[in-house]
Length: 219
Image (cartoon, rainbow, N blue to C red; front, side, top):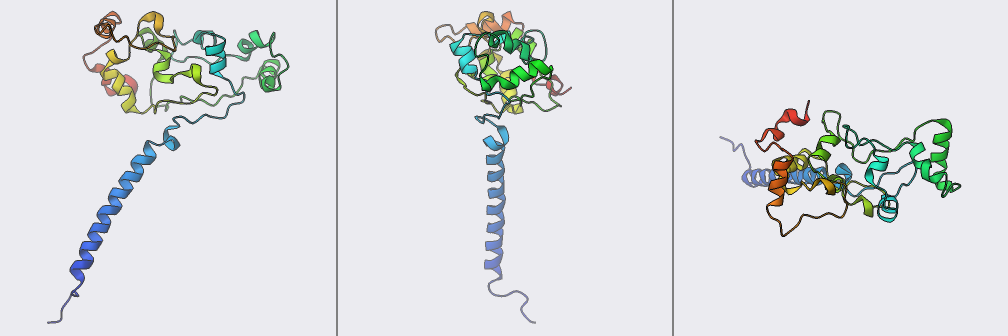
């Protein structure tokens, strides 16, 4: 009977099997790298805006409170974007003719809002409420990073579900006193180990595990 397989068939089979395994592992590694890369998450990637607004200048140097521009952050799902009129409260008096602010002046004159590119843009299937997070002691910098050091705003967190769940599972790591929610420089005290637990009780944060239910964010 004639031989069906050549003498090298076993070698070919081993090489092919090894190659397939390496290919699968390589595809998995590449997918993971892309998934966590700035190309997908936009972390540390400044977006082009109609006006290059600097939080560093307005917050750190001028001392403007977050709530002056983001007026609805304590009472609404959305933090709110400042209107051109809000900007011109100051810029009708200072830097009135700076070319950089021409889009703001035009927006006010034509009553057409500026079209900002959202830096922290969640998918439509995710429910997020700014007001409840502020009320429960989650600081602005916890999610948005040190915007007071950003000449142009960029994202510092992936906004992936895993990132949200880390906070929902361990809220004591992230809550802060009510008067420090809008403080950019606040850091957890090292000498008051019981404070986080006390704050969780003070804010009546549910620690039963229900905060990690799908329906909490997917409604």
